Length: 148
Image (spheres, rainbow, N blue to C red):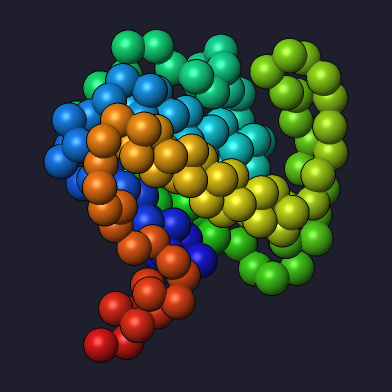
């Protein structure tokens, strides 16, 4: 699923570039990538490297560079754990200071669903900005590309 997430992020960043990179789309992609990093840091039980998941003054170039880095970091982490680890509770603090414990498997599902949700927001903003055709980012399309 992280392969699909990576594919869809790459497709959308290309559409953002073609569409002139409207500011709100870059802000949303920056948030998507920052959230992926924040959740990975929580899963690895390391202190947060940022004060929130909405970085300021992010550029499309920074997003392009971060897409593969986030993917590679998640894959490396997932390759280090075993299936039983997905049931372990991860303790963490939200950016507002609230304490939570969530199963690792649920965090992984959340990261993937959050990506889909935020990409839909980006697509909507691209359409508002005049983009006529968005890239196909359906999971079934990804599978057909992967298997061709």
